[in-house]
Image 1: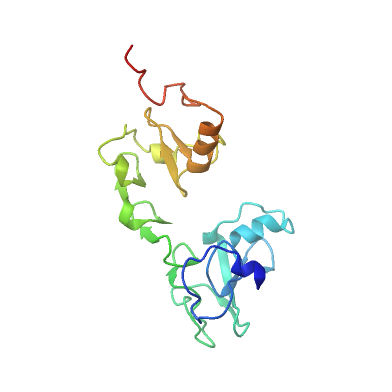
Image 2 (image 1 turned 30 degrees about the vertical axis):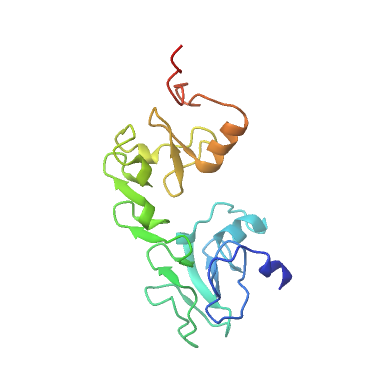
Length: 203
């Protein structure tokens, strides 16, 4: 309970009293994946457990849920926001397409054009050229490249499409956390093309 109370408070528990199962999502169910027969609080917990050889499971890979209230197990479908036995509500936000159970804290929404759930709906727009959702601060103010939303991160080389990214002036993209690391290490050029982050100051 002490550990649960230390997690960031995103919204009140649905019951008003129960702690959440992990620090990643506010939900009242565990999920299971095809790669193993074990239920975990979420896909992050699965990947961190080291008990399964698959360390890259995603929320959409979940196949079944287990209710934290009555332990009932069932297949995840369009009606899975509530337990099919005791009818407890698992989470404030649920997307049956992405198999995502979470809170409304980060204003999640399913982008039809991206085909995945995003966060901060009020601060996002979908760029039809880059073919990804970006922060509204980039609307009309970023260099577009066709389908660049599917570029790998210039730092870790992992996909930037499902998660948030920082758009560089050259149009290459890096994860926000990777961008913070660049700043801490005084890196001032794009790791992909070496284009400077900003124009040189006039002499």
